[in-house]
Image 1 (cartoon, rainbow, N blue to C red):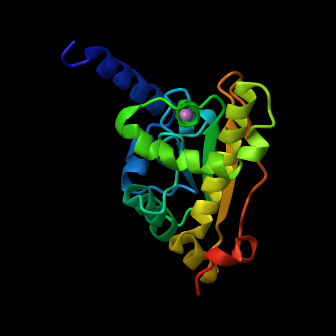
Image 2 (image 1 turned 45 degrees about the vertical axis):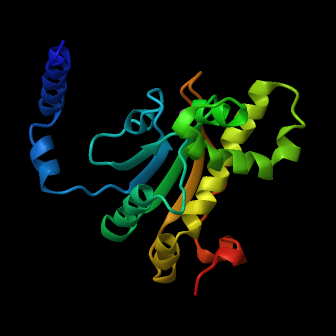
Length: 209
Ligand code: CO
């Protein structure tokens, strides 16, 4: 299986199906992308951005990493946000977490996971911040799921605190940052109701200029 022939066959069928529906689909798309959405999600194979919201190629600009984190020194993630906001001029940034996230689970235990512990450290900080509230829950599953939600809330704040998003808002650009969570168990999305659309909604400490 050196060349994964089956995947190339599947690819041909997939492209064929799309062309059957719209013969010019790929020609049109090859000229430009014009997505309205930037999706920041988990790398988990069960949480594919386009499929969940039933969108075609060209409709969502995507960044995924373990536990959908937006770290203010992560040049990869920040570059994606900058390109999406300043060049593509997306109107919505969606942080989408999911219940039962392996990254969140790993951050809550005390085992040695190797290199990834440096990444998970960011989640441990969030846990420490909300520990009183999380530890009130008796079931481990509920504690993990609450941290999955709180992690999304924190990442929405991290995005809003970037100079990129603040500058966009200051210049009058229309941009909303949303926090959602997805259930792998039933395929349903939930809005965490933390949508932020302007500078007045973010903490004074993080405001620049
Ligand atoms: Co995950």
